[in-house]
Image 1: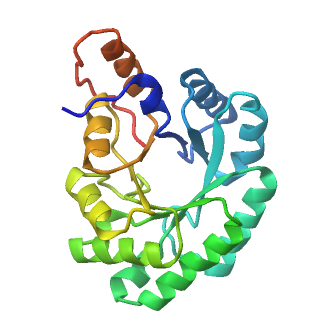
Image 2: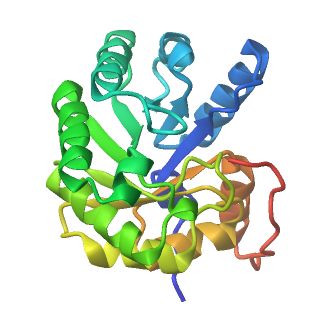
Length: 238
């Protein structure tokens, strides 16, 4: 059975703080959760980057953001501008949404060029490409994964969490098998419990996007202490 310590599990988590209705107080509460549990990073709305960097200073938690979110249909120039502003504000990771319509249309060259533009603008910082798997069939998921690799991105990612559905074990396995070892897989959308997290990691994900970090890591802490995992699911959404 796949197992992982609380500390190692925390190092895989990008704590998602992306809901449009969040107030500054809500954002601060989530940033404090990320700091308390010492997750790898937070993934915040672009307008929250500078504040998150300031609030998390000294905690060891990285700050990432989203690009072309949530639909992926903004122009490459607009995505590049978003990355440049995010860099200036202190973000160190960028989760871009692929141009979903272009991928579904078979416009592979345009998809690759869009990814390459964002990767170049990121200037060596980690770039993750969100496929939005709930809107794609298996062929499109596999092809989108390969195009992500061709574009030079560091990760291929399942979902925004805002289009219905979310990460599934078969999709993570398909994405993992479609790219080489230099491209990692991020599972996001619906990863809300310790059992979910273990399943995604066992399927080949190396990073998890979730707003349920406290639930997941609290369960991991109990398992580390010798208690049996409950499999309880957090009802919050990514």
